[in-house]
Length: 272
Image 1 (cartoon, rainbow, N blue to C red):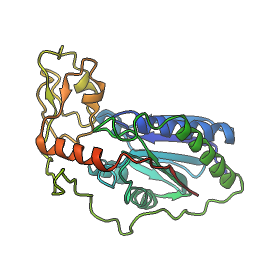
Image 2 (image 1 turned 90 degrees about the vertical axis):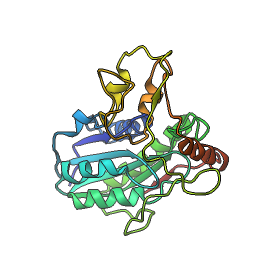
Image 3 (image 1 turned 135 degrees about the vertical axis):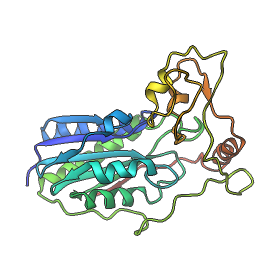
Image 4 (image 1 turned 30 degrees about the vertical axis):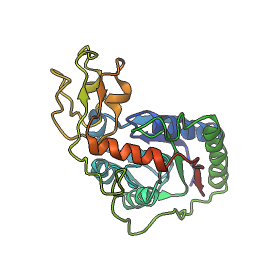
């Protein structure tokens, strides 16, 4: 079994997962001297086609961690639209400095069930989508250097012809999603929270609607959320005028709890 092409497939509403997945993909491609491809499945239109990979492919699958697992709205895409044929795969998860929970194990299970052989895995702390106070600026240069060192180890395993499956941390079977807590330590139920718009700042440019991974912001009136919101903060982070924000008190209480308890430095996790 030899690898002749590497693909980075990623869901990245705030670009951190993209940055990490592309770095790992490109450095592995350089070491293995094979072509690389980047596939961004963040927007709804990019998740409509079935993707198939063969025995000479290597897939880097990059996804953010939401409440200790893979975003539930992405599970059908992973399960139904991504298929391998004994294809080597490396799941990469990014998390906002609290915990990556069972996300890596969940990724392995999904990929294995779809015909992939998971040979390694990585978990990177990245700046939390809810607040700049957690893992600010990460992945930074040190994280990317560590990711390149991990790529060296993965390439060594591949060049040795070792495609054995890796053991990844996490519960198996995968446990329930983490329940967000507020400052009082009680569950903070903000499932129905939606982004709101500062009318004085909004220019109706439509960028928030264009960048929404769920396609849930009206293109005719960007102040209206027409569908489900996964709290990814893409509209907040990418608005050039700072017009989008969340004002739900339960959501804000959860953010405050995170800022009070999870600012410690977290190291990257690499598994071969």
